[in-house]
Image (cartoon, rainbow, N blue to C red; front, top):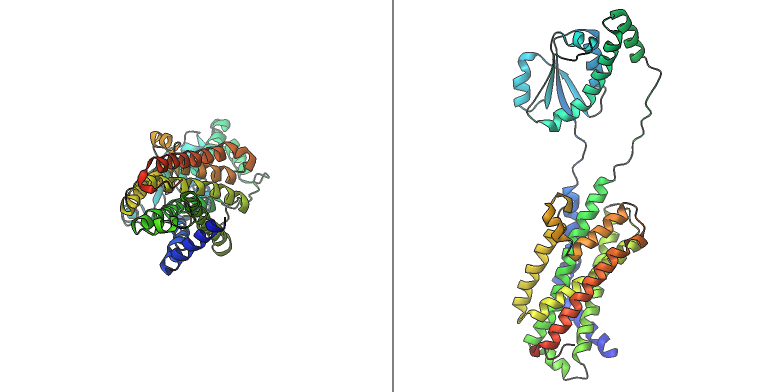
Length: 381
């Protein structure tokens, strides 16, 4: 065991004697956090600018306009009908509501009409307005149907409706979607960084073979198994540092609330670190040189991270791509974290955790088999 610890110290010293590697291994996770902050830094709230053209000066129309002005995130401006085209095309207004003559009468008769919505933004804006406006107008028109043309009866019911003793109690809930999105994006980048970090550290095996350092080490009382074990330990030390650093900075510095217990997220990511090491050893086992190992690493890591949803939510990808993602360990890791954010207990995620461990085991077995069959590596294991 002393031989293994000596190799660990030797590898760590050799790796971090170059200060650039400190930034490479522990600075890149911070870049993932910053990218996530930039992506989600914009406010989800947007004020919609609406123009009102009132060509039907009636109390029903006036009350309808008053209702619109009372809605949140709406900025209402009274304009003339001749100004519609200029205000819309210049972008000063998102849409214009035109109340044509006869609007109030049509509502009172129970057949709402003579209302026009002008917009060049499509349903993105008009759908938001219609959801509130049409609901209000339909309530008034229902009174008109019940009055059956009797204006006095309608007026009585209308006044009761406007002065209704029933009030809606509104309570604002904190929007956690932004924190969930930032957590997902940050962890997605972290998974990619862990894969590259494991690949770079495992690539040292090939580099030390190329410069004959590996064979000089084996001339001492050190065998290939201990050498590989020391590389695994170094990988675990570096990735543990990456995980802790990322989670602490997310919480303490950028105040990103993950809604997941620290230890639960750390356990899931530590399991994935075994997968990262397994993939890294596969690239080393099948590579003939450090250059080919780096090329294989890029060929495996980047496409698999893209397909598994590390860079964007998997839900926006086509169905067939989502099915492919089920065969990638990153997808099961991210899915486990999403379920924890949704309130699932840690014990209920046993399937995700077992699948992640299964991926790690398969990758280690493949690399061990290839190491054993490859005479050029001089029996690593």
